[in-house]
Amino acid sequence: MDYIPILVLVISFVGLLSIGTPVAWSISISSVLTMLVSIPAMPAFTTVSQRMGTGLDSFALLAIPFFVLSGQLMNKGGIAHRLIAFAKTLVGSLPGGLALINVIGAMLMGAIAGSAMASASAMGSILGPEMEKEGYSKEFGAAVNITSATTGLIIPPINVLFVYSLASGGVSIAALFLAGYIPGILTGLFLMLVATFWAKKKKYKLGKRSSLKEVFKTFIDAVPSLFLLVIVIGGIVTGIFTATEASAIAVLYTLILGFAYKEINFKTLPQILLDSSSTTAVVMLLIGASMSMSWVMSFENIPQSISTSLLAISDNPIIILLIINLILLFVGIFMDMTPAVLIFTPIFLPVVVDLGMDPIQFGIIMVLNLCIGLCTPPVGSVLFVGVGVAETTIQKVMKPLLPLFLAMVVALFLVTYFPQLTLWLPSVFNL
Image (cartoon, rainbow, N blue to C red; front, side):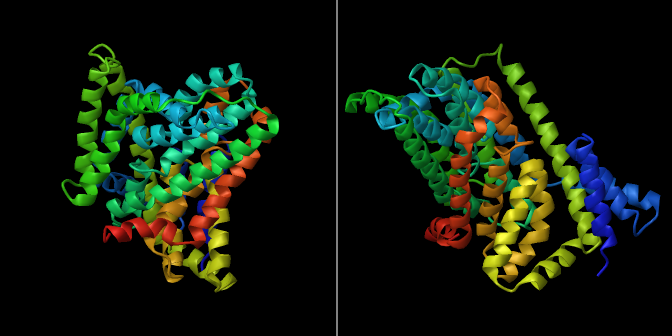
């Protein structure tokens, strides 16, 4: 087994990241350096650049800019206030009520907007001051906001599942979307249990119980926003339209909704389009670079080498899956979700398939791992947003963050070792 390409790839990639090189550049440069092990310089450069271009030549990837735009429209369209009001009437009177509102609101907001950072920013800025006013510590509020923001990335529709489908060779998007619901809700419930226990321990005061009339009124206000999930998921599952077509329909629906709520107008629309374009450009550059690295790894037989090494450690599926989870948790600390999925899917998917795992289940496991990484220091992007919005520090947030972090890890291991948590819903729809 030739370990030189693996060493060149890993050392160059980690080295470039450690000196602050942007992720896309780190991926591209390390791909070229790995190719130089086997072929001359000119073919190496042209092959990597070619693979970056052809990696983006996919109709399915059109869904990403559309979902990014629909997320921006929903984020600016007044949806957060309506979702929070609805969540408040449901759980506001329970112990730790405002923390529970944050979790439920983030699950809904993240699922609809498709962005953990947008969810953390919206929920933190709206609920943070209110939680402080009610006696909650700033650090606890920030910790709940940071961890709950990532749950929306497990509950579809989410862009990263499109990326996984591409990297895995065409796993059904509809099946992946349905598979994400139970793990996402389970993670949210675990966070709510921890938040309730912490609130009781700290003796935070209870909120006012809402009447059925108030619950009904806030639900009616939130229905148009929640209906987006019904349109997108329902349309894909029933075969009315494809996932890519669903993303375009989501843009049209959210645009109409934003104008109806009078939160979006023709003056604010250009800035929304500009923000969406810049986000899409970054994502697409990462995808192109990551696709080139995936091809280079395949060319150098790196996935097969790693797969052989892992299976040589043990033939026990529990041990192998534990090792893969630990590696992905570590990767999630330092790498964004999109390149991580594109790079590590070709490496680990053959291993888990050999162990008898369904590719649908592994896709959800991978996303859940990387979601945990988003709220983990030192590089977690959602961690920085949540701390910034709360105007506190990472050091102060770590104590209340740890039990919430452990709750997410418990959910991850349940999803890993109990396949029906992910596969039951797709099987109901014969996917």
